Length: 78
Image (cartoon, rainbow, N blue to C red; front, side):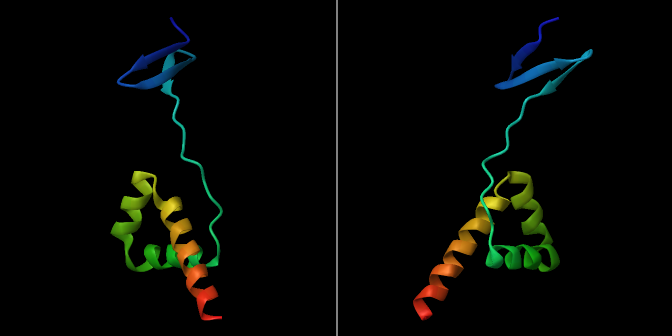
């Protein structure tokens, strides 16, 4: 059996007698205070939106964007 195979654009690795997909997560950016606050809000009040962002793999990126925007607004008001 081959060590690696590719099907449907996904590369699989042989481990034991079974093939497992080699998946990569997008780069995770550091989320600050406002991103964490928004995460808590999503988990408590917008569970469907939270689940969608999480399953699409865009949750961390969205939280990072919100954190950057909130920090920019905070700096403007100073």
